[in-house]
Image 1: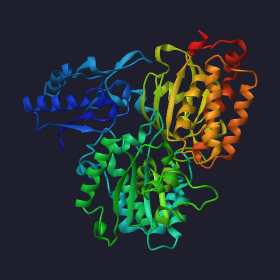
Image 2: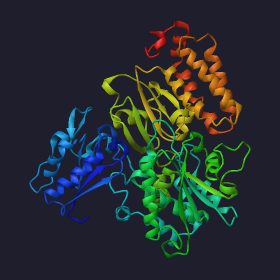
Image 3: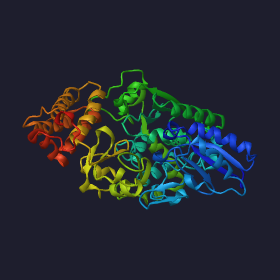
Amino acid sequence: MTANQRTVNVCQGTGCISAGAEQILSLLKAEVAGLNLSDSVLVRGTGCHGLCQAAPLVAIEPDGILYAKVSPDDITDIARSLLPDGKPVERLFYYDTVIDRPLAIFRDIPFYYKQQRFVLRNLGNIDPDSIDDFVNAGGYGAARKAVTGMTPEEIVEEVKSSGLRGLGGAGFPAGRKWETCRVEMAEQKYVICNADEGDPGAFQDCAVMEGDPHSILEGMIIAGYAVGSDTGYIFVRAEYPRAVARLRTAISQARERGYLGKDVMGTGFDFDIHIFQGAGAFVCGESTALVRSIEGGRGIPKAFPRPRTTEIGLWDKPTLLNNVKTFASIPVVINNGGASFASRGTETCKGTAIFSLAGNVVNTGLVEVPMGTRLREIIYDIGGGILGGRAFKAVQTGGPSGGCMPAELLNLPVDFDSLTEAGSMMGSGGMIVMDQDTCMVDVARYFLDFTRRESCGQCVPCRVGTKQMYDILDGICRKEGRPGDIELLVELGESIAETSLCALGKSAPNPVLTTIRYFRDEYEAHIIEGHCPAGVCSSYQ
């Protein structure tokens, strides 16, 4: 790419590809070549642009123009707009329903300008299969700075001062975890990236792996140097074939350039990364289950009390385990400093929160906002409000183990602590918006059905208790509810949360408990009044 060259960035995220973006990319390359524009125009595929609702997406830089819902019939017009005397294709501008007019420049679209993208900084801006694109965007600069100019202690202190908390859902302070692993005395240590994203409605880890795989590798390299490890693993779902392919390409390129392998960047530090594909068990997102799976065992969590993986982890060696988004944040922390990172967010939750915004909302897609941003701003300002102008009813955060927040909590700050206090959780970052026609009893049944099926079966509270809760919910939805069912659900849910061995069981009752807490009237309508207020449960029609 030259200084005077225009760039056509064609989104190749999963959402856009499902809408035909691969054909769009191929046709645009051919059309640009046919117009003899190849010397002045670079057409490339990129990662997810975020605004999945408007797929397929094509962005023109440095103009800043965004074309939405592009079809093969639009290719000729887009290519001709790139001629010296070409005009933008106005019919393809994104139409903002809130302000009721089209917007040509993507930076003017509320979905984008309301966000602060740090973890997602490169998505849509680089070719994920090109290490040169990544390096030209500043990639591996943080790794070089860390490995050649900082001590492991200094790196850990920078991560601690950033206030970064694990973005896989637990929210444990990353710096404390790194320090615990660093001080462990062992000849062998491991670094693991948890990319086992299994929540229905969550796709941000997938998007980062597909759109910016080198950022994950860079974060892991820094982590390996900081804690004294020479081996890393990325545990990724086999259901993410495109992400696996991109990671493999990135690892190969990083080895060729000397960022991975023996004598990293000529420093004498050895570090390499391997990919392990999981078989799709939701419970393997739990740290000890994930470790057992890599070891070749059955993916079931270890019982409490147990040592942390930073003490006894993979093959009984000290192991640092963080999420995709956590590792992708590390280069930002090292480049800009921990204090700069900590300047965003809340007093106790620093940095940004990343969500997969889905459901009955105008703008579905990938969202990154400062910790503490209100639910209302995400759903209405960024998300564009409820589809069809319908009334908002609830938003479910944190995946199938999260909770459902009602309209009266729309001003709730989105951070680890506020969501937990309200009965939900950050989780892996799913955010599903529901409108007035949603039955909350049916929603609770749906999510509990998922978690009960995904239980590893090791402990009775989770294996048996979630089945009992599901049967009661199913009966309520089938017009077989009885007085006392609500109280029994609460008793079972609280007992399961208190006595289960791992986070799957402890959080599985959340959708039920929060829907009873905030939508108890719907349960009572089903059981006492004999009708489903939303008209969803067929037995009541």
